[in-house]
Image (cartoon, rainbow, N blue to C red; front, side, top):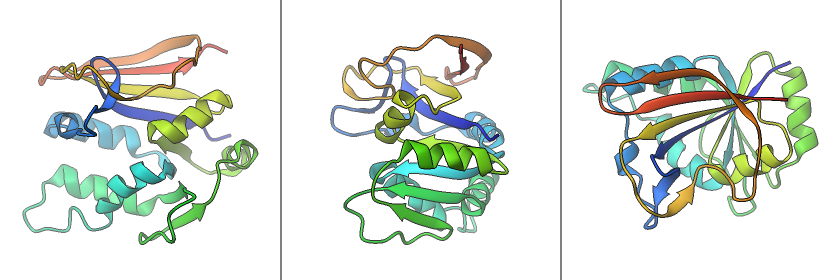
Length: 186
């Protein structure tokens, strides 16, 4: 059975964006980006909420520029090769390839995807991840903690959600980012 992996780049105080919606501080340097690429390589399908999809759809063409860095080209290739499922009640269509639109998040449908998928699934965006976390569908949480405190904003993890986790991997990077990967202690 495939695993559902939630990954988020956060501030030290746990936000994916600040109170104004900015997340420019989260852009990974080359070392972190290469590591993220390796962690994302096994993903066969991404599950996104609308806002995360709108950010990620830039990868449909990003990396095609002649001056693009190798890590950018690598991630673009990985992203384009994966299937994408976007959960939105407001989007009319999805302009990216290998993408389908679902109007609501159905935990049973995601469970069925996990049971039949040939590769792991990634879930991106704290809103949609909250639904999956509360439904007990997420198998792993990976956080990339950035050396910045933003004070408020969009939290990476939902309020009033509790779970026992087991640290299975960690890494420190030269730019001060710390990677933490947890499995659920079930």
